Image (cartoon, rainbow, N blue to C red; front, side, top):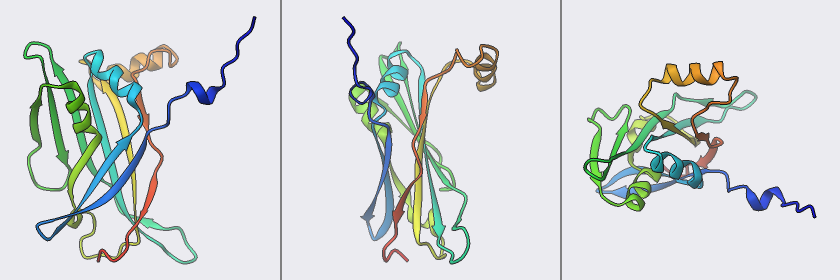
Length: 183
């Protein structure tokens, strides 16, 4: 007897990124969040690998008769790793360009730690839109598991094994978010 399962029933939903505006103390911030990708995230955390999520957000301007122009992306990085001795998770967050040191915190629950890395909040709007015209934002998330080795050794292992040895990871599609009355 042959049993065939439809692919859509087996496949997990592709990871997606979403943005929302947050107004706090008369300052506009952006909060980026990730949905989906549970299998890769749990694989990283359960196998003792460092989980790194990079939220890339860029400002774009529409141009008539030509390609739209987008600035260099702002990078908000969230990392999570497990400390087996202290039996706690170490979570770090950093926003490139905000002129602040990375924030580090210790979390005891795996669920709370995973929820922490799924949301990149407090991304100041002035880092993205600095007195310039902006029509929309583009955002995506890059997720990767990192072992104790260097990135060069991981790539070399993948190359020499013809792609058989790889570290889990994902990349969401670029998603556009309209800006209405921000500037």
